[in-house]
Length: 436
Image (cartoon, rainbow, N blue to C red; front, side, top):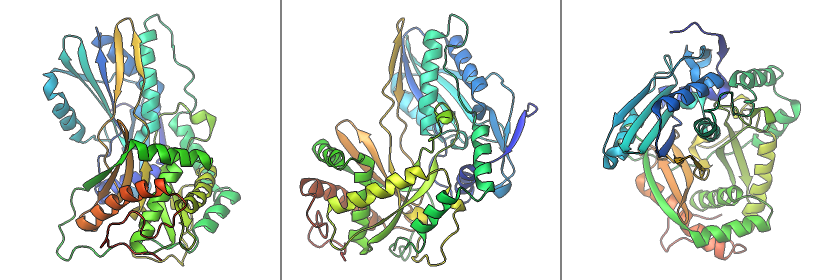
C-alpha cells in the first residue's frame, strides 16, 4: 500500500455509517456510478479518464483504519485504477451488475472498484462501485458530469474540468472546527429547542416468534402520475417543495397509525450549503430530525404548512450533525430516531452526453436501505413509487404493508381533498389505524 499523504479523523457521518455497517448490517453500503456507453469506446481512454477522477478527488483514494470513534481516513497519492473488463451477453448484463454490486469493498485497501462489460460491438456497461463512506448521491452526479467531459473534451490535452472546490478533507476540517466550539450557538440553540422532549415513534411490538435479524424486507405501493401532479401543484401553491408535501403525508400516515400528533422523522440532507462543496466528492450528506407537531384534526394543508416551516429551518441549520446535539432527557417512546426515516430519491441522472458518436447514459441502481424502517419515494416513468424498507424481526409484515399501502391511499385521497380532515381519510373499512 502506498505511503499516505494525509491522515484525518473520520467525520461524524462516516463514523455513523461505519457503525451501521458493522453492527447493524443494513442495505448496500456502496454508492455506485453506473452508465451505459454507446459507440466506439476506447477502453484505454476510459481508464485514463477514471485515473484523472481519482487524482482529482482525494475521497476516491481514501482508505480507512481503526474502528468506531477512532476511525481514521487515510488519503493516498494518485495511482492507476485497475479497470476489469469482460465480454458478456447483453441479456446477462443486469445479473452480472447485481452480482458485482453485492461484492464487498474492503475500505482498508480501496474504496473503489471499476468494471467494464462489453455487451455488443459498440455497447458497454460501466460500473464504478464506490463505498458510501467516500461518496453520496450528489457525488455521483459530479462524477458523471466530469467523466463525460473527460471522454468527450479531454483528448486535446489540458484539464477541461472546472475547479474542483474543496477536497473532502477540507470539509472534514471545517466540521471539526464547527464542533470544537460546540457548534455555532444559533445552530445548537435551534436543535435543542426543536428536539427537546420529542416523542419517538410508538412502534408495534415485534412478532412473537419473529425471524432472526437478517436482510431488510421491502414492500411498495405506486403513486400515480395524476396524484403526483396534484401534490406538486399543492406544493407550488404553498411555496414549498414536493419533498415537504410527501413528508407531510408520511407524518399524517404515522399519525393515523399511532395517534401521535408530535412526530419526529429522520432524513438525509445534502449538506452542501457552502459554495466550495458544489463539486466535492465525499460523504457530506447529514442526518437531520424533522419534528412536526400537528394540530387537532389536521388536514393535508395543515400538515404541509407545519412541515414546510420545519424543513426550511432544518436546511438552514443542517451543518450541525444530529448525533452531537445533546439528547433531551424527556425523550419518550419505545423506538429510535432512525425508526422513521424518510427519503425522496433524486430524479435519475438525465444527461445523455453525446460527442463524435459516443453516448453515455446514467443508470439508476436499485434502491436499498441501511435503516430498520425507511420510506423511500422513488421516481418512476409516470409518477412515483413508495418503497418501505423494514426489518421483519422488528416490524411485522402486515403492519409494514398497511403503512405503505395506506400512505398511497392517503396521498390520493388528500391530493383530491387537501382541506379535508385527515382522520381516517384514505383508509379502508376495518383499517388498524387510529386517529386522535
